[in-house]
Amino acid sequence: MTKFAVEELRYDERGLVPVVVQDARTREVLTLAYMSAESLRRTLEEGETWFWSRSRAKLWHKGETSGHTQKVSGIAVDCDRDALVAFVEPDGPACHTGARSCFQEAVEGAGDFAPGEIEHERAKPARSLGGTLAGLYDLIEDRKAVRPTGSYTTYLFDEGLDKILKKVGEESAETIIAAKNADAPALVAEVSDLLYHLLVLLVERGVKLDEIEAELARRGAKGGGE
Image (tube, rainbow, N blue to C red; front, side, top):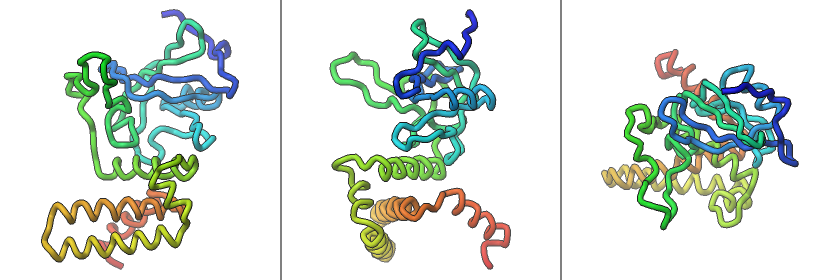
């Protein structure tokens, strides 16, 4: 493969270039993101993917919240020099939903191949509660910035802190009721609702998950108590 000078890359009117992120080992497409000249520079210097968030209008290092970084094995440019493919070794899911790939839904009428059918041990989704919460936090943070119409999360942020606190209180009470009734499926559902609303509260108040993690680690070092 011939070598390409990054100075020759053609950015769009926003100073961005689309980047297809692909697993270097399985060749599975993981996500589509965008890079600016600065995020590309950091990617090349640090060996892990950096992108430009169009919704938040800022640089972001993949995995800075979730820990699911992407080690870069190589980058290729297309023939028009206005798009890139980044070949990476992912440390965990690429998608904020916790899925390995962002491309999980097949388009109706476009054939029988279903996303996620790649038969490869390394292509199996790597899920964890921490990673799922981190991905959900990122999504909620994005909803706060963009405020898409029809989103329940948008509704909560539009209503403000008092509404969010009210929902946290309601979900806490419903969690207690489910636990008292010894209804395991209901308890799982209510705890999930409570965790979601707690994440909304954290985003609203600007508290990061790594701050919670650090506090829990501090308590753990003391044997779980003060």
